[in-house]
Length: 219
Image (cartoon, rainbow, N blue to C red; front, side, top):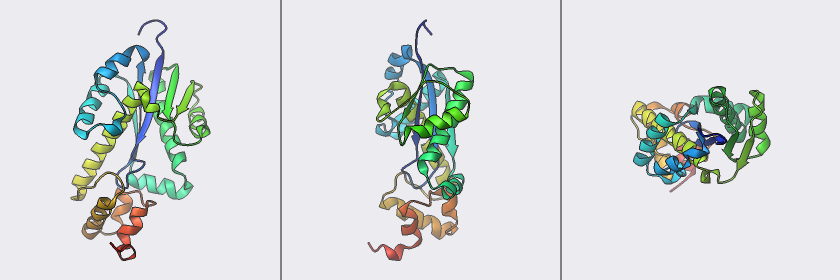
């Protein structure tokens, strides 16, 4: 890294809006001198990249740059959400854990987070781990290449986790929270019973009630 080259950690999440699968947060460290390389790899907001291409870029990023991934599986997510009833607090904790893991071995001049709520939540969670690094939280932070790279790693990890869960359940579990998700949930319950949703899905979503009480939601 060249003298004076700013060291930046980007952080982003995936799974927040998906009924099935975990909540994932990823952090990636890269100096500003690596911006051209990140662009050359095709780095941009992970939500706008097709899955196959995204998984390829993810593998390249993991080989080239330090990163940390925090995963909260559905069963753990449901226990935590029922206790605190605040998704942003869960996200802040996962962000802080990922940042902490990366900072231990890779000091940074700046941490940039894609803002999702009150900035105090992440700031306090990061401070709890004993870090005083400069922290910037901004909307649409994926415009910053390090954050975009983190979004790719987070989304790729979410996709892999969802694929594994689908194989284990014998049901294709879709991303998102649309009607196709309700149909997959109904198929899952038919095969494994209602309790399986606590292990595969985020049960505070409206999808949960539509799956377990389909007669209340006529088509």
